[in-house]
Amino acid sequence: MTVSQEEFRAAMSRLGAAVTLVTTDGSAGRHGITASAVCSVTDSPPTVLVCVNRASGAHQIFKDNGVFCVNVLAPEHRDLAMAFAGKLPPEERFATAVWSTLSSGAPVLEAATVALDCRLDQVTEAGTHSVLFGAVIGTRLAREAEGLVYFNRGFHSLGSSAAPPSAS
Amino acid sequence: MTVSQEEFRAAMSRLGAAVTLVTTDGSAGRHGITASAVCSVTDSPPTVLVCVNRASGAHQIFKDNGVFCVNVLAPEHRDLAMAFAGKLPPEERFATAVWSTLSSGAPVLEAATVALDCRLDQVTEAGTHSVLFGAVIGTRLAREAEGLVYFNRGFHSLGSSAAPPSAS
Image (cartoon, rainbow over all chains, first blue to last red):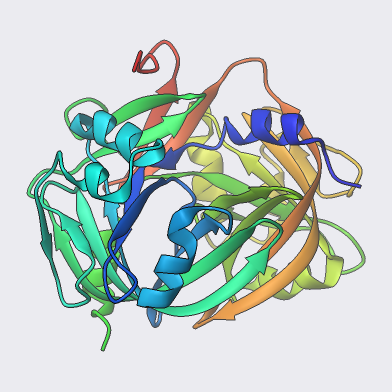
């Protein structure tokens, strides 16, 4: 017995999550998607995970390339988040931003708050989705610590000026 | 080749994440921890995951009880987040808040933004941590949509009054 999809989605709208673009490039081609189901797993060894719908066009490309980059978005990236979440063909998604690479070859968003360059390490299937575990082989931090979070069905900005860290 | 733990931690400080208390109760006892490595996996069937250090006292208790509740915190819960992240014995952690239960029997924080009552469904090991997949068997939403996020090594509040959803 589980809850309905509607009840689950309403509940998930209350779980704030960073908005990221997960990108890949390699023999299977270049692709990228907007993802908020991303989390830190362990620092020993440095590992993150990303949940990807197996019905998405990007899923097999992530697996075939065996590499991906998690680009954590900043407040100014709302349009980019929408572009990578929509119906645009892969190449058009990449057209509106500046990209580079780290060692994996996956696209690194120049203005990302942080980019996590990953080698695909392990896959666990759960219902309609695959959970891709990435060994973090490189990172790049922007100068400013600002973030974009999705919560209560809308975008919210995080920044040290807008909401200072707690003193507790 | 992966990055150093220090480089990984600095990078992870830029990945904003909701702050939650993950709790359990059953034949192995009552326990709970603060966790920000929580994410939505799929709505078919409704599933969330939580990453737990296998060296933590709570880890085996989660597995033995086979149930847990993800209590997503609101801005006023910073002290509670600190209490469940510290060295207090389990029972003292629970002493400062009001709890109830849904069907699993795991403690539900009365004032949680949302509570996700789960049956442990699958476990994947990754380095020092276990990833616990929970089938969501019940939810309870607070009236107000407010959230508490950890980002850039500090707490940040999310609420519809403080940061309205984007119109895009």
